[in-house]
Image 1 (cartoon, rainbow, N blue to C red):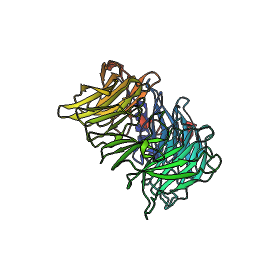
Image 2: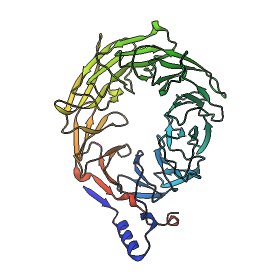
Image 3: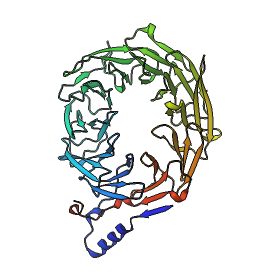
Image 4: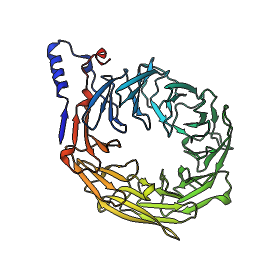
Length: 499
């Protein structure tokens, strides 16, 4: 394995320490890099203490890009090689757009020190907001009822005042892209706020979630848009009913909203949008009554469809396979598949409760790391659609230890797997289930797939930066490239030396 250490940097540090009586300011605070992020061709480490975004590529190249002070949030702009870094001071917040290919940055002023960012699916828009646990820095008070819409192409921000009686948003949910409109739902402790992200200057529509006859507001937990943006479905902490908001199609004004409470079962645990081709409905999973129900959005009981479950399940798979949806739970080995169009059902018991569920829709396969009486395994479920039922065919791959990370590649053709405490990464062909393994010097604590060049980046523990790059599906240890201590890159250079 090739090991690349920034020895020139260490020499610089020693020379600086010996040649100057004062300590370099870069070494005053302890290094606390922000979490690593990956683009299609690089891994980026943002180090607030040195004001650098360090870009590391599989060929061992390391480049430091100067960013503003106070970095507190880093996120990749979806489907691009640009990384966004929010920082600055509490009184003068900034956002740096770091181009990881060109090694350049563009800084834009932001009007408030937000600490949370939510992207639209296509990555053209983002919404900055506050989290309840965000640090205040030197500020004594903040208006957590404010969000900001980011237009990525224009690099501009627009402030949106929610003006609700809640504190900070619990979640921000983008609706589907429409012709000349994209709604955003801000889930709050007391209700939901709706606005059009393409027209942030239009007033917000605030919707309370108080049932008729109740004196208290229901607390929203999650919100799901329908595929046509006609409906917004909300799950709350106190109601078994799904709160259904019918949204108007207005442009240029706040959308009109009518509200209904639709009952289906007891113990509402999860909701999800149904598969395409199933309009005016929402999937609701009930753990107490053990039912999975397709609820009619207008509450017409005769249109409800339901299937009884053999176990109390609390999760719906986020990705459906055709007309099939999946119900599962981290505490039960049972997985249930249901075709909402024709009613066919399939049930299977895994070797143990799944820690997670990865769905490859194009392969009609599911992958679940489990730990049962016979040890750790990767359960592979293949969906076979027989005339009168759905059949979930189970195959299991024994693992020496419990899986620590499981990730599908972009095309769901391969699955990458690591296990706790071992420096081995496994590549699994999702069609043939053939495996390839390569072992590196240290156990990974994170895994990133880099499509350009077909690389995997394995992150190791430590604050100074430690990555190993291996070819996806490779088996030769000698081809792995390890880059260490890159968080210190250019730490001793003055700001003017990087301009």
